[in-house]
View (cartoon, rainbow, N blue to C red):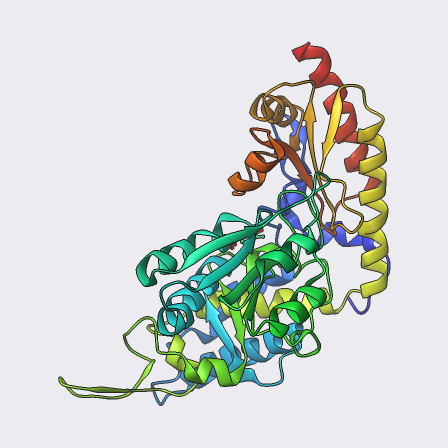
Length: 408
Ligand SMILES: *Cc1c(COP(=O)(O)O)cnc(C)c1O
């Protein structure tokens, strides 16, 4: 599988896509919730348990050496994926949620003072809102949100009016899981830094679709999840600038994160281990590394073209479908479409689509403030991955048409 340009052929790398659901072939359109996993990732995890399993960084035996080498190699793969300058700027976590909680509790808990402000946006996933509320309540700080326009873009004028000398942290998604909007993160980083704030980017929806370069972006923290980018669940990473990570206190105590311990006092391990208390998800990290290798072997331009073509197709077809109202029509989007059908509840629509073999997501997509802003209870969301094809779009549109006939 070297530099595949025939993206359509990659579908067969994903064994689960041969499953039948409700007596139908599967059309999987829920990759924004979690992507399916290629055989190479599944094999990497199984191979690790079959051949190399041991705890990392401690024991002096051959398996421990192999496990440690594979785990640290996975870290270097994440480093390369994100464009970080140093491997120890990559902290393994359970995923985007844990990465953001780490920054909120450690950096926020250490630095925030009463009256300080944390700026998020109305577009954020709950994972990029609630951790900030928790630390804000503890420190007497405040969480403010930048407004989103009716078509689902961040209002940069509102950002300018809300960013100020009290702003300590700006936390914003790279791409919206609910609408697909790609945010102008370079511009946001620049404006936040001009105001003296540090910036965290929630990259959960960017990893599978966009080029990420934390060094070029000059971003302070970047959070990702393996499972949103063809890797396993339960593993993700936090990139943090070395100087910031060095200045932050540990957030969880335990094995691995220490240097010396007495009953009275502990000195802490160096980066990245200071933030990795306990036995890590070794198999998960290795599977994540295999997913990064899998993506890296695909021609990036061909993949971008494939997804852009599918997004255009699904957007145009749904826009022409009677009763469909598209929600979120930003100019720059990853391959996600949200819509409503004739005032029907999104859950009813999704249930009927499922009966026709089409797996979509319905509801608020962990973005209740956004739904409140748009004045809707939720949406039906179709999110496409590299394994989807025009045939999947066609099956979705036909199933939506049939659903409309059944419901009205
Ligand atoms: C999925 C997602 C998260 C949360 O990721 P977890 O893997 O569940 O921790 C956060 N933000 C966005 C934009 C997401 O799509």
